[in-house]
View 1 (tube, rainbow, N blue to C red):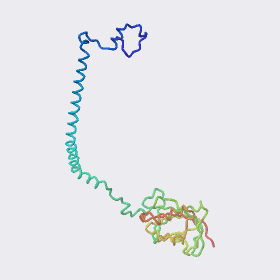
View 2 (view 1 turned 45 degrees about the horizontal axis):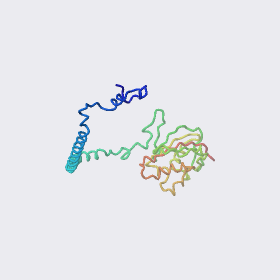
View 3 (view 1 turned 180 degrees about the horizontal axis):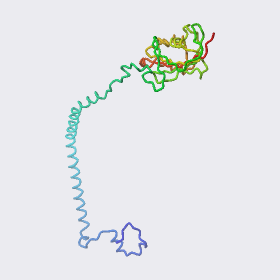
View 4 (view 1 turned 90 degrees about the horizontal axis):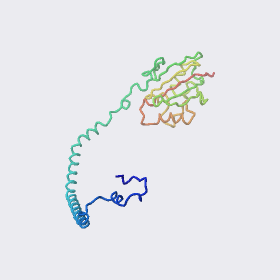
Length: 265
């Protein structure tokens, strides 16, 4: 027989009426056909009644067992929470990380000699605690107290992200001061007295000695000495390191490269 869903190549009129009937309906015997209508009605009623009864019993059973299931589920959840409580407490305790070494102690964090690369010039520590490294020795005269010196400088917050404070060559603002007059930070005064004109010296000011060798923590007194950053960004960078109370002492370590450009008579 041809599938009923497949479209025929010929019109329906080419098939006899009996063939169309057989393709759409099941084949039954005459004896069954005679009594089929009443029998189907009775059977359908009995089947509907049985289905309704089964649905009723299922609903009743579900409603009756729901409180028991809920109670048992609640008891299981409670027992599980009691059993897992010690494990959860242990996980909370072990999740707390130990304090970092930098938060407790760091004896060499403000000393660049502890991390020199091959070829780097080591720092020499002075009596005051400042550290100096001569990158280039000048060939001119040494300044004397009372003389005016012209200093080109670059500063960095070496202990905190190594941010540049200022480069006087970029801003064309060299630092000019009278040696011994108290207008420069103590580390600059000490460094310049041992330099020759044309020389370049690197100065490292340990964070724990920053206020002694550099700038005051009192903002009203901070820039009574120089060098003072001439740009807003440079001053903000330096002020942040000096004023931030959450930083450690070694975070306030400052680094300067200075060049003694000229000595005025």
